[in-house]
Image (cartoon, helix red, strand yellow):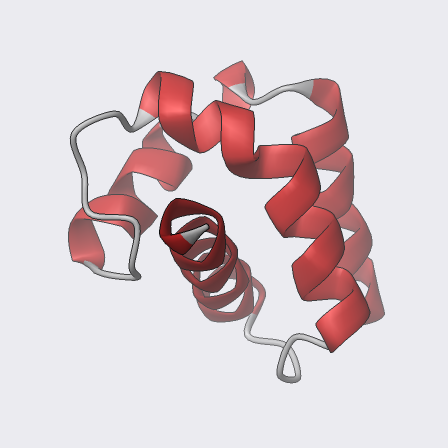
Length: 81
């Protein structure tokens, strides 16, 4: 449960800082959390689940490797901003 919360928080902050958009809505956060948790576990294993520069750098570095669902969730959020 802690990992899921941390992943969602890290993703929400990553996307908000990348897109320079409005704060993440609870629905967007839940969607990204659900769709990107596996990507975080696979691509960013060993990093703390909470937001931090290492976590944001990992997602930025691996954007092309993210699952289609995770990428779509991030892109949808960026378009809303």
